[in-house]
Structure formats: structure tokens, C-alpha cells
Length: 509
Image 1: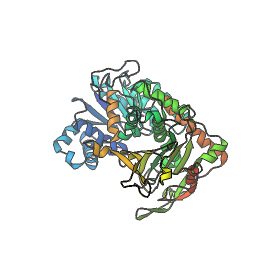
Image 2 (image 1 turned 90 degrees about the vertical axis):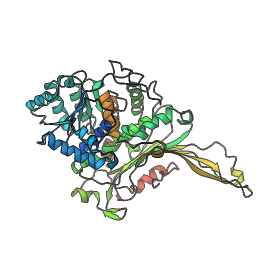
Image 3 (image 1 turned 45 degrees about the vertical axis):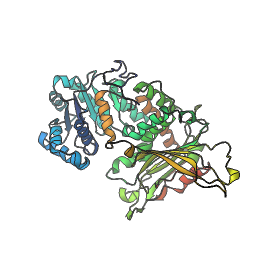
């Protein structure tokens, strides 16, 4: 899609228009949780990259805040260390780092102390307070208190945007509680709910692939597609997230947000425009069309597992309960067979799987097309394979279409056909570096483009569906099946898809 010039404006009503471009840019970013893990690994390096490429306003400032007792110099040292750990050395000119660090200031804040919140507001200029972007990289249980402190300090103007990092609750009820608290102070169009998967280039490329090419859209339905798989596989275990993950499990940690957002983008109808309202309207239709699980289908079409000790690479890793150091029935793997009850997708199964301690770190979308209705090559000794489309999200980023082609030769012993890939590697096809997903999301927050953020009705539709699955597990007494670390989950996950004469796409390439 050709990028439009940035002089187009959004509607003042919903913050969007059919053209991409800001109504206004924020003059400052207020970053809560600035000394946390996410800020260190993702947010500060992303902001440095945006500044280094001239994408932030010249007078833009970043006011960092947390409960740690730091001054400006100490936080700048923290930020410098974080940047140097992530950014390639060829981009680390001292002048660039020092120029960025001058944009950083730090104010210690305890959000439960109204005086601290007032002092935080006083650290901003008047024009910044009225034109502010806020990023809450804090625990969700602090959202209500933080939002209340912002309102008390006068930092909730109609031109203030607030970005909320997941998780937004643990179920529908807690999600509504959080959203109600935020919406008592901020209008929906000023709330930016973050799912960092939507900032990945390959995820955005899915829209270009579907709606920018006449080749795919006519086949993107039950007439042309046999089934679709979505896989997010991690090699890591708890990795310091012990308390959070054991209360959450992989269904709430990965499926409720990342996987359902990918599913919505794959399955949605063409939006009328490429803007926040139109795109999110179509996504929520998909999420509301997800077939709920009943007693029978939750037993038949869901698989849950928990890893035990095994081997990944050349090393032996402990089991989940060994890492946790206590008994637990939390699932670290889930596989689902999902149906979307609408005209486009009637009869097309979507298979979702995600888990920890898998053999490889992979995230991809796999589309299995239906075979040609009649093979003219069968009597000449060749079998056909149906076309396949692979969208790899990580660690590599590519689009691969598998098609049938004839092997060279005189065909005296028959026509020999072979499946070969047509590859589009985003790494090699486009010059420049691979961006951190948060770069796009932070810039969109600052500029006010909410297309790649999640609306409240989407979040609630996701939770409603997820809650029904968890309730089904409890009613039926389902417990996670053990699987060895370094494998692709319980054997029941293979049976889930094998019953439909299909198999999981191999991820070892």
C-alpha cells in the first residue's frame, strides 16, 4: 500500500479517517513502569530507534516514572545500558545515544500518593500536559489507581492518549472492571490496548497479502481452503514469570490475545477502508462468530498439556512443576479445533496450538488450500499436492507459497511433478533492519493511529469465548496431559487434527 502524505487529518469524532495521518502528535510520552523488564528490553530501545530515524518530534520528551528512587542521571545510565544491550553496534554512535538521553527525564512516583501524581504533572510543561501520550507498562491491578492519580493530577485531557499493556484481566469480569476504570476517565478513542503481535511486519503483511492481491481473495473461503493452522511455539519455560503464568496458563496468556487477534485478521471480511474503525469492526464480527464449546466439543476438540523434564537442543531442562517447585494443574500447552460460524468459513476448521518448551521457537500461519477438482497427471504417474501458504512470523519473517511444478525431462517414464516454494523473504526482499514491534505501536500511540490496537468489544468477545473453554474444562474434569520438553506436545494433539485426515505443519524448517 502506498503511504499517503501526513497532512491528512483524522475525524475529531472517532480519531480515524480513510487516510492515514495524525490529527495531532503528542508532545511528550509519560512512561510508567520505566525501570521494568518490558521497558528495558523493548520500549527504550524502540524509542531510541524512532528518535535515531527522526520519527519523533524535535522537541519531544520522555518523562519516565516508577517507584525506584532514581534521578535523571541514574535513569539515563539505565536507559543507555538497555539500549546498548539490544541495538546493533553499527547504530550506536555516541552522539546518537547522548542526543536521545537528553530527551529523558525521571520522576519517582507512587501512584497511591496523590502528591506524587501532582508532582509528576508539574514536571511537564503546560503544552505537554494537554497533548500527552501515556504508556502503562505496569501490573494491571495498578491500572485503576494509576488512572485515578492521572485524573487527580489533571493529566486526562481530551487530547491525552493512554496505552495499556496486557494482560487486561484474567476473565471477562476482571477485564470489564479494568476497562470501566479506564473509561471513567478516558474516552474509548483515546485508549490504546496493546497486543504487540499486531506490530509485527508479517502480521501487517497479512492484510496486504489478502486485500492487495486478486490472486488470494477469491480463494479465501470455504470453497478454496481446506483448513488453517496457527502455531506459536516457545522453547522457554517460566523464565521469571512464575507467579503470573501459574495463575494464567497458556490459554489466557497466548490464545486469548495473540492467537485470537491473528485468527480475526485471517478470517475477517474486507474492511471498507484501512482505518481503525473499519478494520476493528470486521475483526469483532469474527470474534463474535466463534462457535462456543459445549460439553461434548470441549472434550473432543481441545487438548491441554503440561511439560515434564526433557531435552531441548543439547541440554536437559526440568519439568514445569520442578521449575515451579510445587504441584500445579496449569496448562503449558493447548491445541484447539475452532469453527467460525458464518458464510465464508462454514465447514473450515481452524487449528490453534501453542506451548512452552517446544523443540523450536516458531510462530506461523499455515493455510492448506483444497486440491484441484481433477488431476490430468494421475494417469501419467504423478500425484498432486494441494497448494499451501506459510506466513512465518518469527524468528524469520517470510511468506512462502508451495506450488506444483514439472521436473525437467523428456517424460518417457511419466510426468514427474514436484512441490516447490515461491518465497518472499521480508528480510532479503527489503533493505533496512528488522524493526522491534513496539516501534510501530509506540509511534502510532504518539500519532494517534489506533488501527493496530484492540477495541473494548474485541477484548470482551475474546474473553467470553475463552471463559467458556475454561468453564468446560472444569465441568468435564479435564487436566493437562504430560509431554516431554523438547516435543510438540501431548500425543492427543496429533490425534486432534489426524481425525480430519490432516497433520500439523512441520516447523523444523
